[in-house]
Length: 199
Image (cartoon, rainbow, N blue to C red; front, top):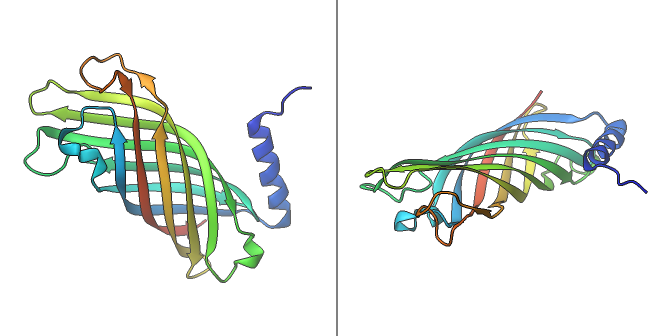
């Protein structure tokens, strides 16, 4: 018996939920922060664990219960703890695709609509130090899980709150001296609030 590809299963869920009611398409522009970061990259002043601003956007399509989410986030200064710093510039960028499971829309039309999500994608870590000895530019496969809630103030404009965990898959580093233990790993939490716009 052949296995059914994951993409076909997701598509079937979206189509079945879409028959009950038209899909809700949203663009969410968010602002938030990272916290409790952890990494094996050279991490001056334990900067990755400290809070950092994150900005980004996501495109969401939701049926009655199931949906998909494509999320892009950027956290400048992720490997910097303040000024002065040995790190001249740094950032962590994420791009993930997710499956979303939300409370039925018919039951939450006039209240907050909670949801959970999970998916996978890429995490890009980059930093340059003052002496040019520790330069990192690495793209890592990873996954994310999260939960949130969204409520609409009008038919087209709403606000969402969300918490996500990002975790890279361990990968052996080919750059000596830039990681602890020889593996490239990166993880952090992200809390955000977003302006949601239906289209």
